[in-house]
Image 1 (cartoon, one colour):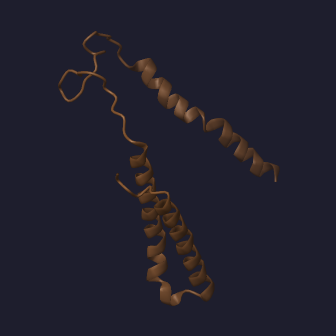
Image 2: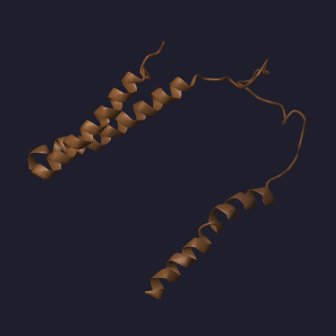
Image 3: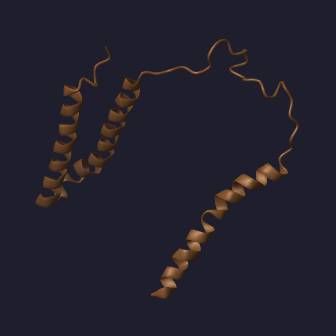
Length: 118
């Protein structure tokens, strides 16, 4: 049993080293020739005019998250629908419960008026 934990301990010691080496090697061997032109902001070949940050409404992010949730729902339901005839009653009930939970989320978002573009 101690042998299994030894492998896990080695993993936790070695795992941070891999990304650290991947970050440090380029910093050591990369050429450094700073130049004022290289430090300027570059945007599509044009000089930046005004503030370079554009603020988006939070509603767009929420709408994207809701889309993502229902997109993932389709990924999970597709195999369930393809194998529907071979599923046991328990699996069919589990799929229906999954659909009902997602419908409850849709109703909640609809009542909070998250899906409106006004």
